[in-house]
Length: 259
Length: 327
Image (spheres, each protein chain N blue to C red):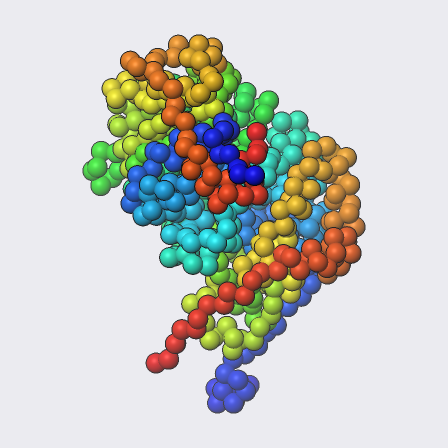
């Protein structure tokens, strides 16, 4: 029986959409989960000269199996360099890296991210992991790709805590801070793909995923969402990309079967 | 009194063995109320020492690391910790750490205080502490709420300063971090405490250099001569090290490059069982309180999961080539 790769899951669509954001020859700092798969997919397809960096200080790795973690021991043998956090995040902080991946529990319309708390900081309803390297990646990388679960409580008018600044209140506010990095360039959510207006830095909908309507996205966004002049459907991944994802990158479905 | 000639006739070095058990090291060098740097990033975490701290019921510790995993969760759940200085307390894609969340959200077993930084600023705080630099200017944290909220450190958590060199930019300043004691796992050490690490260095060696003294547990104790054959690999020299513990498998369920890999099933097991307080207590009774030391833990692991599973964690042989240190 031949295997059919024409169907795809939401996670696979998001991974492919994120992979498209990476250009060849770019230096990319990789986080766990879908970002890791997205970077590997880019490297296997249109960006063979991508240089992958992990915050644990691994650079240009040649892992024989897909790593499970950003501090996976499979990254070490074959790497061009293995340092520590100081090297891994130092390369971020000095502005050498093109792309970083970010995520969080909440995002606002200027791409400010919360990965700390829901509710009051000192007495939170929910406490999350904290920044990890996110704040550093947001400050240092030339641009960031944000991946988010799309729910109204997560796409909030105002985040409960700014872990990683995006464009603050928009306009040139970020520019005035003098970060080495330029800020978020795209948000790939479970419902669509979003970009930021050049002048106001406000997030707008560029494309909705197959099976999702613009109305649904608006209803699940906590502010009056702006739309691109011509909102389109997110491009579906080719069966070849799905095959690579399933068969070569995540054969044991460590990342792709999680909801 | 020995003369220099006599020393050289021996083997050239004065030997002071610091090898002892985890019980002895923890009881001697870790006291209630201390600030403790717990070294490494996901890799080479000293679970043997962590579990011994829990068994000895140490209290009111301030624990510091750029990123924390289940070891911090277990210390928090056991009530050993009052304060956490870190950027991350979670278990990556494995999931959340429930003792940490219960402590912060519900005050179980008691409320803990946190000073939140980023991974890089935590590492820089250790670097500054290690080098005797009072503070470090950095781009990270700027504009985030980590600048606006602090716990016991108050205004001394982080500051903003206009660049005195005239760039016109404001920089974040993070203060040096030093600890009373640090502990870490490493691949090998000699009896005097010179220890060597390779693979994912994480926050090492800076998180350990920033301590008054260091406890190290190792996979193997080797001769001083072995250390001297590859001195570039030494993370921390003997004068900083107070105790050396020989404890194979002490990073389990995490990895130790060249020795064993991550035990994913065991991490998922911990996270699953620690969802409830009772489940967590049962896990701890089995794997921490119910064993005397790492040797018993290892024996229990093999008895429970079988030799085949244990051997499946063993690292492949991917030994590096040797370099010539000749002169």
